Image 1 (tube, rainbow, N blue to C red):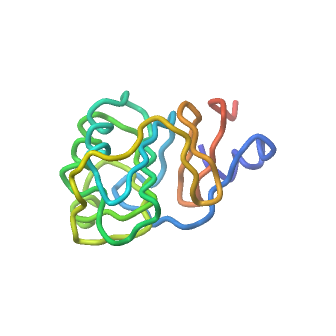
Image 2 (cartoon, rainbow, N blue to C red):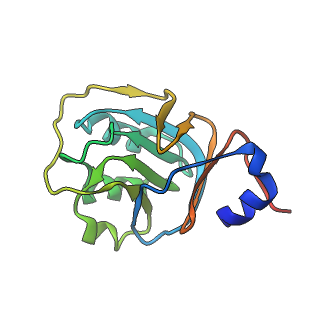
Length: 159
């Protein structure tokens, strides 16, 4: 479903993200229920979430907006593909972008950085996170395409 069409039909029920993300991966549009991770320059919980959240989910990673290291690279993106996640939205950076661009996954991130993150396991899972002008709540739904990201408390259809 196009985000523009969703906005035309459901504007009063949607949260619309600010345009802060760059798109990576082969999938330019994806949607699904939100699962969250909140970390800072540490991707242990990101890997854990990628391995455990249900297929079809959108993993939202609040990395505090840090651009000093990457929270996901090609290995973690491959896990997302294997686990059949709908996509990943990262308030932070990725690395291995050329490899990720060849994968059947949709990834939004603030940019790239070749430096890997720490591995301390600090952070939170399944909590509301806020960035890009919206609140990403576990269990809500994210709809992503080339025009942007919209969030809804309920699944939407254009029937």
